[in-house]
Image 1 (tube, one colour):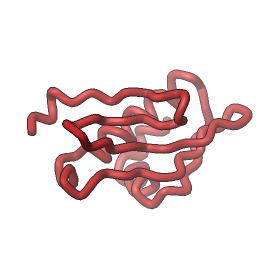
Image 2 (cartoon, one colour):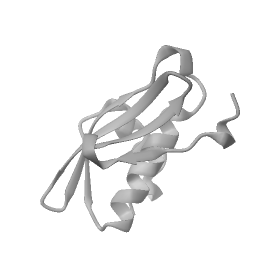
Image 3 (cartoon, one colour):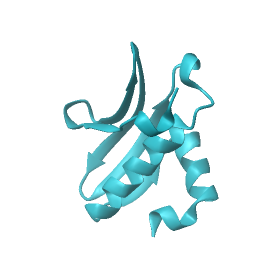
Length: 91
């Protein structure tokens, strides 16, 4: 799998960021409420694990939050871990 060919899609209707690889979909789900985006779940199918797709999703979600001046909250251990490893991502 060529990670450079993967795109993160913002599916606003489903409140999630997605990466599609063949029949598999990895997603980062969120709730948007009064200027705050709360990331609730990152799901990467086992066939796609270990390719950095979860990090791609979180990075896209945090970039969206920053560009829309949203406060970030996380209820997802994966998002929280990413923020701890990359604190500049929420500045």
